[in-house]
Amino acid sequence: MIRAVDFCFFLLKAAMALLLAGMVLLVFGNVVLRYAFNTGITVSEELSRLFFVWLTFLGAVVAMREHGHLGMDSLLRRLPPNGARVAALIGHLLMLWATWLMISGSWVQTMINLNVSAPATGISMGVFYGAGLAFGVPAFLIILVDMYAIATGRVDIRTAGFVRDSEELSTLDDHVEPQLAAPTTKR
Image (cartoon, one colour):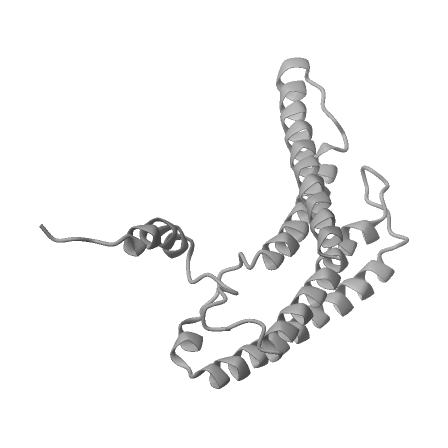
């Protein structure tokens, strides 16, 4: 099961790389065509915007699985173990609620815009709004799995690292912790 999930996330990362490459090719190609040949790719702007939206939402799913989103866990570190567990579960319930709002809103917008075509490409605008579903459903499942791990005690919430306080601190921690672990001797 874990290998299948890892493979799915590998496919997500590959799709993100393809979307980014597509964006670069479309935008750069359009710039070259405009300046060098006084022409352009008509669908370039619309497709690159669609690729960007999907890239952002798929990246958010990958970051959620890797617990790469920024957050604040200083309160959890100060609470006793049971208090930290309850606070983390409440926080995860709030995330489930927000994710459910995202899923339901994306579903409604996708259904409303399913028969609406984009002006240049003719692609259904439901594809554009479907990116919210592509984020919401996996994110909901990831949050449920994390909640189960917290509720059953499989994870010590105070040391699990579900969030990062800041990018600078996480980078600093990666460099400082190995030095602190090494024994020091005075001469």
